[in-house]
Image 1 (cartoon, rainbow, N blue to C red):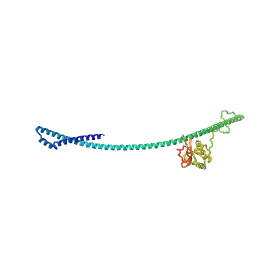
Image 2: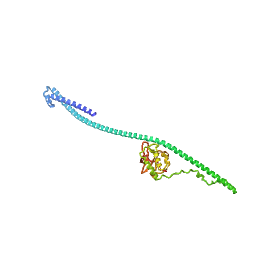
Image 3: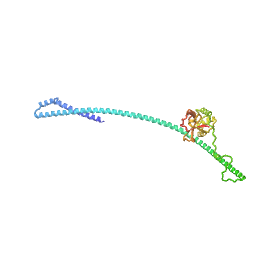
Image 4: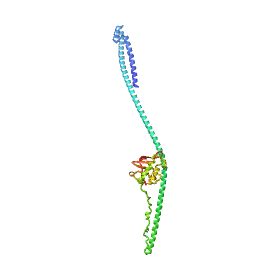
Length: 350
């Protein structure tokens, strides 16, 4: 350190000054014990004026050297003391700086340990979430298979209904044309018999029979009235009796159920026939709004917001609760109606 260097230099100068003072003291002692006494002895012991002058010059030089040496020694003592003070101050400052550095290091290490602990917690939580996601993905694969089969069946059903409606409309239109032609022939025959001119430009009016325009419209399918409160109570009682039973994909009981299997069997107990597929169960029911929900109604979820892609169904119990078969590895239970997220559709079995 710089202060230590200054202190060593000052100590060396002080040592040299002390040596010089020692030599001066010895020389003075040899000359008689002091500057004044040395002067008297020099005067009294001189053999000649030249010897006296030589002795006086020697005494003067010794006196001058003594003063210079004493002055240098004084300065050396002061410098040494100052250097020692500076060195002590520097050492104290260095000690405080080292302590501050050590404290800062400890704080950094503590913060680093805390950060590492947090990183460990985040990594553990991430692993947990990934595990849950993997489980949900596996369930989604099963549901996707079920959804695809159900959508294909629903598409076939709709195609058959549309084909049947078109065939019925074509048959009605042909019958209307046949009746219109028959009426025209009868009218012309009557006019000839009466001697009236035949009107060929006027459009023929069909005889009594179905209106050709109306006949082309397929009649809407009959819809059964929504299930009453007694039916809903029966369905709810059946579903609650299955609480704790395991989720079984494609299960229809009695040992286990999936979501649509539980709903199907519960409402079958109440006299309402439903298909074992969540999306189809929505189309087989009467849509209702959230505000009009009542116990026994069905709640649906879809990933695409399309009713055709519904993948989960539950039965509403009232008070914001529902009963359902959640997923593989779980059991039939009562949950908050937002357990699977915000529902997308609501319907009343009918």
